[in-house]
Amino acid sequence: ENGICFYKPKPTCTCPPGFRMKDPVDWTQGCKPEFEIVCNKTEVKFIKLQNTDFYGNTLNYEPKVSFEACKNICINDLQVSWF
Image (cartoon, rainbow, N blue to C red; front, side, top):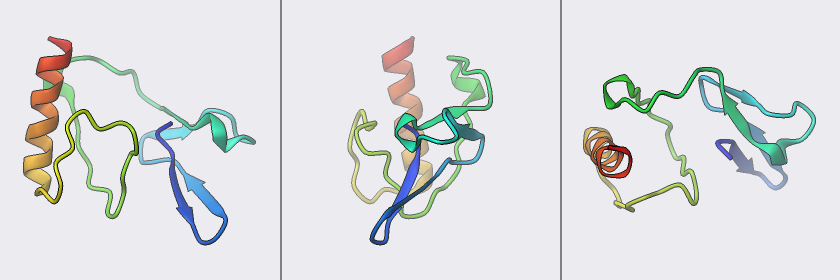
């Protein structure tokens, strides 16, 4: 969960900015945020991660959209899902 893994050929994993490993010796546990998650759309921060897909975490799949369009889709999903 929330880990970014590369397969060349063995998996090598890391956590995205602002996250750390849940268990430093077991990547299967994924990454956890280093911040408190607040369900408030005005506090959502987006960062661009090139060639990255958080498989299984997509509410609405949108192929090949701009970063700005992706942010808007996500904010809209948050409004529909949480508010």
